[in-house]
Each structure stands twice: as C-alpha cells, then as structure tokens.
Length: 502
Image 1 (tube, rainbow, N blue to C red):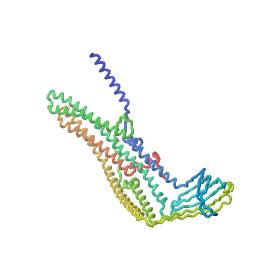
Image 2 (tube, rainbow, N blue to C red):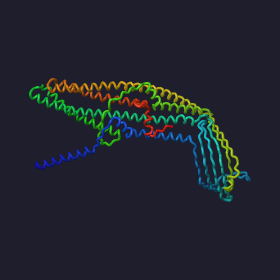
Image 3 (tube, rainbow, N blue to C red):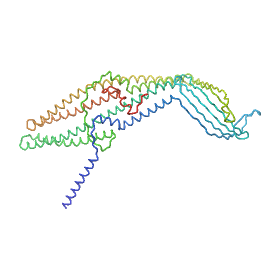
Image 4 (spheres, one colour):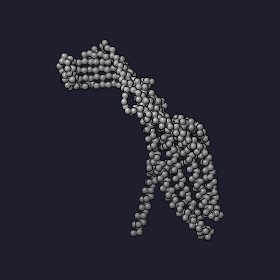
C-alpha cells in the first residue's frame, strides 16, 4: 500500500513537471525597449489600426473632391422603350380633344462632357445625342433625330458659389486628417509609454520583492543564530521573522500585479496572450532643451485641433453666405448652342443640321415665408460667432498646455539626475548598514529604515523616467514636431502611411 502511494506520488510529480515544462515553452519571451514598444504600438495596436482606417476614409473623400474638379464623361443609354397606351390628342378638324391608341418603340443615347467652373460656380457642358422612334398602327413610320453637338452653360445667379467654398474647405479638411493621424499616433505613443512604465514598475516591484525575500531570509537566519547565543534582542528577532513573512506575502501580491500589467501591455500591442515580456528601461535622456516659443510656433502650424477650429469657422461662414442669399431670391440661367436634325433614315439624320439655341431663366422670389429664411440666416450668424469664440478659447488652452508641458519637460531632466544620485546614495547606505547589522553594530530598526529609503529611491527614479518620457511625447502630440531631429513628424511617416501632399 505504501509503495502504491509512493508510485502515485512519483507519477504526479513527473506529470506536474512535464506540464510545467510544456507551459514554460509555450510562453514566448520577448525583451522590449521603450522605442520598440512605441513602434509596435504604431504598427500593431488596434488603436493605430482604427486611426489609419479613419484617415484612409478622409483620404478617399479628398480624392473624390479632386476628381470633381476634372472634366467628367458620361454615356447615357436607353436601348429600348416600348409604349402601347391610349393618350389624349387634339383633333384640329373636329376642334376637340380625343383619346387615341398609340403604339411606339423608342431608343436613344448620348455622350456628355461636363466641367465645373469654380470661379463663378457654374458648369460647362458639351453633349451629343441620337434618338430613334418607330410608330406602329394605322400610320407606321420611322424617325431619327440627332444633336451632333451642343455646348452650354448653367449658372446659379443667386450669388452663392458652393465650388468656391469647397475649394477652401476640402483641402483644409484633408490637411487636418493627415495631421489628425499623426496626432493620434503620438497619443498612442503616450499610451505605450504609460503602459510600458506600468509594467516596468510592476517588474521592479516584483524584483524588489524577490530581493527582499532573499535578504530577509538571510538576515533571519543570521539573527536566528545570534538569538540562540543571546546576541540579539528577542523583539529584533521577532521583527525580522515578521518581516520575512510579510516579504513572502508581498511577493505573491507583486506577482499578481505583474501578470495584470503584462496582460494590459500585450493586449494593447495586440500580442498573443501567452507572450511574456521583459522590459529594458530607457537610457538616461539626451541633453535636450525645448524652447517654448519654438514649441508654440510648431503647435500653431501643426496642431489638428487648431485646423479643426479653422475648418469649423469656414463651414459656418459658408452657411451664412448661403442663407443670406436665400433670404432674397433664387435665379438660375441655362443656355446652350448647337445643332439638331430629324430624318426618316439614319443616313440623313446628320445631314444639313439646323441651328439649335436654348436659353432658360428661372426665378423664384419668396413673398411670404413667415420669417423662415431670415431665422435661418440669423441662426447661421450666431453659430459663426460661437465657432469664432470657441476657436479663440481653444487656441488659448492649447498654448497654455504647450507652455506648461514644455516647462515640465525642461525641469524633468534635472529631477532625473537628482533621482539617480539619490538612488545610488540609498543603495550605498543600505549596503553599509546591512554589513554593520551583520556584525552587530546596527539594530533592526536602522536596517529597515535604510531599506525603505532604498526602495523609495528606486521607485522614485523609475517614476521620474516615466514623467520625462510622457511629457516628451505629449509635447510631440501637441506640436507634431520632432525636437530631437528638428523636423515635423509628418515628414518622417508620410510615405509609410500613404500620406500624399497635394
């Protein structure tokens, strides 16, 4: 019976060992630097995928606008149309209307070329048509009619020119879309920095917890031997024992926090859930000072929110212009010059064409609308005023944000230098205090105090690093400018993300 239990225990042991080995090998270990994390976020994260697709929608919208400025060629065809019906006709001999049966087959087609004229807001057109008519019944006959060529122009005489406003707004919308993409990618970089340092701090806490378990275990064993020979107070011995138990419990908590932080980062980078990450902290920041005036200038040039305010003002100005014209009257003119002909045979339909002139003027004058048009105009003016005030307030807020972030960034490097010095000094003090404790020159309270100082110094160092890099990428997102290489960020990613300058 005992042997069976031993055999079962051995089998379970080897089973657990094998499963643990399989699980270990199934996890992919990847070492990441901060730069690699940011690049992965820009390439693979779901947020980046959404931003790029939103940009592509705006890109094709702009392409459609550009195509609308070019001549268009249209083929219109009705290959066949058969009518068999009774219609009302006028009988001139009897001087009255009569109903007569009619049976006919028709086919017609034509080519049309049109070109928008942005300056006046009208449209030029050039077309040609050919129609075929075959009547059946008592009077069977065939006719062809043609318009070999006709050129014309149609224009809204209202004064409102939508083409003019499109020419102002659409390029601005596309420029905003390009810079919005860069802005969102920089925001994704900020998120990547944040998640990177959350995991980095969790890894540091886990490593510190393991180190604390080792240190407290070593100190506890030394204290245990000294307690046996009454070379240490019982309270100090029990304090070390308690510290040892707390260290083990803390290690378990830090391991849970580490797994949670790793899951957040791998999910953000769209990695496999079994991926295990080991982070390498960024090196000491380069000596870089950002001039506030330079940052403000670049923000005014590149910030998509400012472009958005400008776009909103233009759109409201367009609405004011349109509603103002609508309060008066509406008039359109349509004129064309060409040739046409009718014949009973196809061979004659293009012979000796006759002159065709068409001019049409339509006028619509509002007489009584109970103030509807005037109300729309006043509402458009109020909306324009709101958009101008909003733009001014938004610009002030962005300027304040830029100046505060630049100030934080410029002083952060000094804070990191101080944190490094504090970190190194705390390590040295703890090492010396630990040695003095081992030889009995210092008590447990002094040792624990210096150890806590060491932990705080290490935590403070990585926190200062995090603040530095987050403020750096925040400045980049506000200005869309790379201060390290002194060029707009849009220039560095233009080809990669199919951003086309027009």
